[in-house]
Length: 488
Image (cartoon, rainbow, N blue to C red; front, side, top):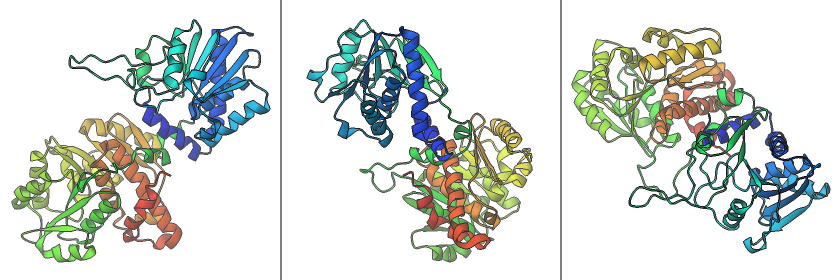
């Protein structure tokens, strides 16, 4: 089972692995043609209703595989408005192959005749809202027909995640308005079933179109598709982060804070001992520094840090705190009373297995720290992934275990990451990672924040390695994060 959003990411990851979308469309179209053959014998009349995106492109391909049928391809909209290059190429291939086509510029011009099969390829899994024209009229004609209706990926007008009409609105009684949508007899969906399809009164076929398992298992550029920013948002709505650290070290909390800003957080505050506050502030005028009395953070600071955390979306706990019982006691007390999100790193990690907290934690240990926490590791990435998943389930928190191949798990899902390089063994890159993950965790799901954060941090490290080789330093990474997080 895979959500529509995750499917889009896997699709993009497959392309990055060398399986182009054009090849996937060819396989998808072939699968649609097989479903038509299962629904009607050769010689039957088949009408293909096609939208202007890749869903329509799948049907363009299917028409080429249906030479033994009487096919007509109806494009809903002008050919100039085809949204992707591969859909346009496959539309042009229809003309070259002399396959009958009709352009429907106006819903009043749509006439399906009396086909035996209708292929609904108007809208795919990414569609939202009530059907507009000409799709609305087309859906009504489809539902009035006696033809067998085969929908591509999801019936047009249906939410692939819920099975509900995309335009349905609940009235005052909580009942939903049954908005217009295609009532399919058969659905051919790709790679894996979508959650909402089981709620439909339709036969569902899941077609393997050649997406490699690595496209789901490894983080990739498709994961960045979940990033975005509301153009009407205001200061603070894109995340406020509190970094708690410093004392023995000044660079670690500053690196985390700057990385959080570069990863998209609106505001980043650093709570650190007064003895290092000036130095931390000196790293960047963009940081808001809140000094705490003394030279080390300890139990006496719990109330003040808790107060600061209440005004933040995510806390980064650990960078530069140092070791010692006073530090560990501070972490215990803070987490015991905290119920928000936190990224836990460095010396704060060893407290996590023994603390009772309502907080949602993302722990970022390297393999040595994982063992100190009570977890197990292995040289083989797949074995390590299974061990990390089991330990994350025991902790009931998300784990991001750093290594040559990083492993992320929330105890259920597991994702591996291959970005990064040996030059990143230099000190401080983990602090950058913690900051990047915190900014993301302020606005998206913690597991996905960890996946995107480690992927982007590795890409930033790869860019730094290209410029500086093994001479890269952690301060090179934060300013490279914005480019590493581009999903274009």
